[in-house]
Structure formats: structure tokens, C-alpha cells
Length: 134
Ligand code: ZN
Image (cartoon, rainbow, N blue to C red; front, side, top):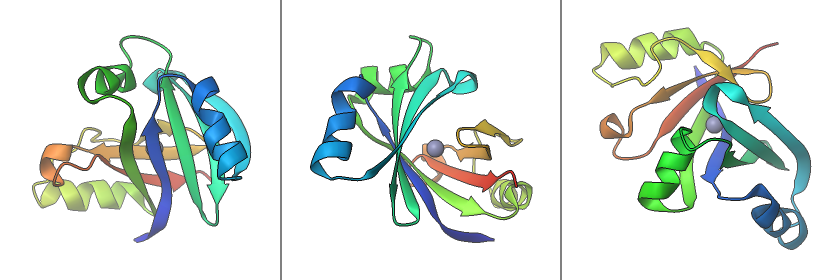
């Protein structure tokens, strides 16, 4: 079951350039950075209530984030919903015709399992389901 929004992902060219806005202007709680080799990104995380803002900087030109920035520029990239059973969410969505980018959960930042749904199936919003590994 999906219970809440876990995080909002924002594509940036440079964490160094964008971190000060969230940390020093919005005064959000900065939780540090983490590299996610699987997605070829470096992530900076901020906590706002129960939601996290994740800034995503590509670490390679082959990163999906690099391709996104090339096509659309920096900005909102995805919304991630938290579920307590990611495999069930995938099965259910795929069963109803949603195109899954990930048919199996994979490792995300912050000790989570994640799966993306294709924006073509979701009204153009790249949608992520995540579940924390407890
Ligand atoms: Zn995400």
C-alpha cells in the first residue's frame, strides 16, 4: 500500500551550485550527499517534514539524469511514493497496463528499493515507488 510521498527528485547540473538554495535560503535540513552508482548520480538530500527533496547530479554523460537535462533542462524530475510492498505495486500497476521502467525493484539511495513507472503511462510524470529496507 502506498502511504505517503517519500521524496521529490530534482535534476541539477551541479549539486554545489544548487545546495545553497535549499540549505541557506529555504533552510531545509541538509542530510548530506550519497552516490548511487546504479543510476550514475550523486544525490543531495534535504528533509522537509516527512518528505525529502533529492537533488540529482549526473556523474556520467550516460546517466539518465544527464539525458534528462540535455532534453529538458534542470528541474523537477520525479515524484516518489512510499509503499510497504513494492513488488505488489509493480505487479498491480503492470497488470493494469502501466509501462514499468523497472520490472524488478532495484537499489536506490538511502537504503531503499525503488522502481520507476514510465512517464508515457502516468500522464508525463516520472513516478517512482520506493520501499525502505528495514
Ligand atoms: Zn527518487
